[in-house]
Image (cartoon, rainbow, N blue to C red):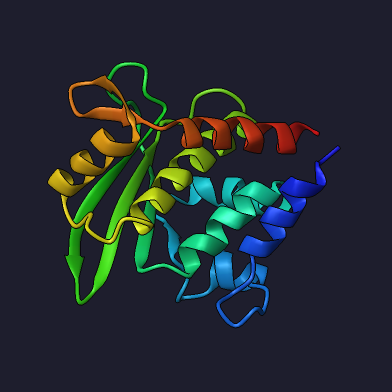
Length: 171
């Protein structure tokens, strides 16, 4: 059973700046959506995350209100044991771009949780307007993150977000 705090937080974050809730169309299908798929295999995962995890839906809504556009791609493999990672792309015309790469391993729910974890990282970038390139990203994560290897970072918040999304999906 979801805690009231989780539902309240998720509900608050899914509203637009004018306090109007974002529709599924606005977050998943609209040409102006901020989370975009480069590989259509991610489409059912993105929809399932939105429909079954209030935390995941809140991440999509938070990114929709930001100046960050997220491109999600599936890759065959990532370095080491990584299941997902976020890369910063060059900004253009006042808009920032990040790319999330996901290696589809494990169950559908596990892949959605990995995507939720990476979307949390995208929110961390959205909350740091000085992140405009890879150097800015490294500076941010040296400040807020846990270094896992050379220029490889994570955050407690992203780890918790991934676990919460998974818990919401299997509940």
